Image 1 (spheres, rainbow, N blue to C red):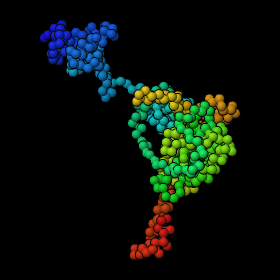
Image 2 (image 1 turned 90 degrees about the horizontal axis):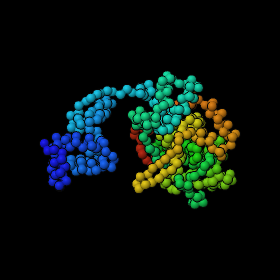
Image 3 (image 1 turned 45 degrees about the vertical axis):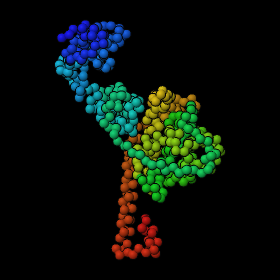
Length: 456
């Protein structure tokens, strides 16, 4: 076998030679001892020569020299194996020690985490981490804690990254998308200024975004219910109200009712370009009440991002994508929103974007610490002490588990009302079909006479 000095000499002279595996091992053994003792600058020179000699990439060359003669841990299927660097390099893999890591977060912790995750309306790891630290003491206060002290301590100490890892298999659900039901407004929109996402820099509550969510169930014929979603830009505080249809009168009345029930004065409204918002009634009302009225650019949903993101995360998750069009469903839906708003505004934390920087094609976003809308309002200097005291008293008397149970109960009531409605309509359709004889002649007079029954 050629010695190391001879190999290096021929390499420096420009001679080409291919090394066998045995010769590469000799080079690694000789260079590793020197490589592991020198400075970073000298290591770079060694890597240059070593890479030319062996043909290895710089990354693998550094790994081979760095780990030679040392123990290297390798994980596969949850099993930890330790190898000597040289044995790992030549592929034989002589094991020194093999053990399985003990799980810190056992099945009890995972089951409790999944339960609280579902209770939190499926928050991400960073938001759920804050939610756990706040919600567990409240559950103890109302005797709603269903797990032991050790599990509780682990839930309080768990990190956001570990939460996402443990919940990975539970997050492949609810991937649905709806359709846009916004119809262009009148020429009146030219009197209402445009406001984009970048223009929002308010440092106090009161400036809100409003949007309508249609419950058509995939059938746009006739009238069906809508949900008016109003979200405060600064705090994330939201209010929702179900209305019969998207007529201007129902939208306007619901918006006024939400304004009266807010804990802070409404100072600005931003909406899309639909005719349910872009109308003289709302424009005159905003002028009278000294409310700033702005609108988004057409077909730019990101301009209304603060409320658009709530349409799915709150409204669709609560009531789904079915068709609702009866007074009974309207009544149940408004009861559901009354309880749901309390639960979300007081107990579910959210993150706000602080800054966004672009370096080339890479965009870096930085968010603030997750906080609930209630916490953001209480921390605001623009809100009076009387309002803060009212919010604090309300917060102390709320049981999140009781609110969640009521939400689930009302969701079931809404589903039962929908099933009852569909069964009644199916019976009516069958009766109409029985009235039509098999030898029914389809003339123009018969078609017009029976049009009402046939389309009902």
